[in-house]
Amino acid sequence: MKLPLQSPRSRSESISWSIVDTGLLDADANMAYDHALMSALANGQLGPTFRFLHFRDCALLGHHQSPRQELDLDFCAREGIQVQRRLTGGGAIIFDPSQLGWELLCRRSDLPPGDMSTLAREICTAAALGLQRLGVDAQFRPRNDIEVNGRKVSGTGGIIDGEVVLFQGTVLIDLDIPRMLQILRVPVEKLDAHAIASVAERVTSLRQLLGEAPSKETVKEALVSGFRDHFGWQMAAGELPASLEKYYLEGLELVRSPAWLTLQDRPKEEQSLRRAIYRAPAGTLLSELLWDERGKRIRQIQFTGDFFVQPRRAVLDLEAALRNSHIDDLPQIVEQWFVQGEVDGFGLVPQDFVTAVQEALR
Image (cartoon, rainbow, N blue to C red; front, side, top):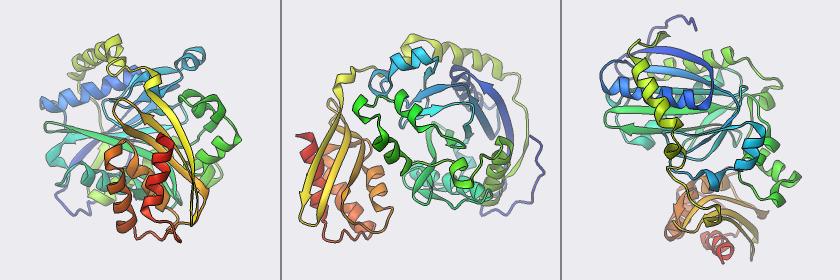
């Protein structure tokens, strides 16, 4: 991708980045590249790199997820959908050739100081700035999403391994929600118009926002522009070093081994969908959550019902805060959300949300 250099408008020292696009690949090849790039960086054979990724149909598990718990593996096998595991954590994501992946790989000293949450805010802000170039009001939403009008258009995640940072994200250029729900392990009774509408309220795509899907090249240029402007980096098209091949072959061997996919392999029965209706004095709350029985964790949760809450995005923020949280932390998380978010529940109080979850777990 040939993009002109810009003079850095940096809040920190200017850094030179190589932009690479590894083309349309199978999921195992893309994951092997991540392994290779991190190894080359750790050994001083690679500088800061911004990579664009394209995938054939696949489902990517977060590093700590079990394939049997997260995916309908029979459906994936029938449809030829590859299943792979990422180096980064987070939830399962669905890729097809219409989506665009992006990631940056560098040493910790190449980024602003702070922990991973600080880096997520800075990097997501840069990506959102790029997406704004396309004419959408993209904004960072803690912990690590980019949203437009309260709906997610990009998810991100990262890891720090020693001095090496891998931070990656997606851009939903187009989205097939019914197919996504078939790939994810969603109970049959949830595969209905209500489920599709519910997901559509929380997730969107550039096609939906703009009326048509922009080209990948347009999205790539917009993203690079956002990172240039936010960080003041010098960014230009580059090439991967020949020394990467050795690490790439090591990565392929790793991610193609059965042990890699079953790294976290737990029976699907240990993770179940729970739901309950709680009728509080100020409204009715329906809580639906994916429950990890062994770890006593809320993997995912959604609140719907007959109630009012301001600001509009407040419930989405609570759902994000509770994702992968331990049940013992539930009251504290809800209370913190209510106070820090300056939430007006129109009579609903934090204990109402806590009780709605507890009822579902009974």
